[in-house]
Length: 90
Picture 1: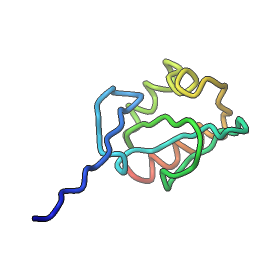
Picture 2: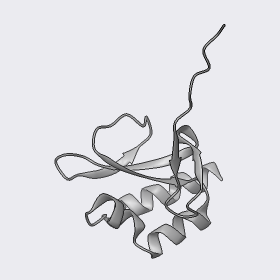
Picture 3: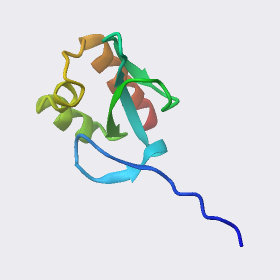
């Protein structure tokens, strides 16, 4: 009998729905306090997720959900990088 591998799920900061972790975009605050995008899902630090829809990203940004999740201020460059990444994948 083959064991079924459990796929980890995470909640989108925009629409609050759960999705498989690999379908979401992760923003991470490292232990040093640096905020960046995490494409591998393996960087150490506190993470927040958003699905790859511009509407979800805009909603989460407007409500400052990333700042609240990561407990820090997020630089505009990171937001711009996230937006361009979402636009490429839409």
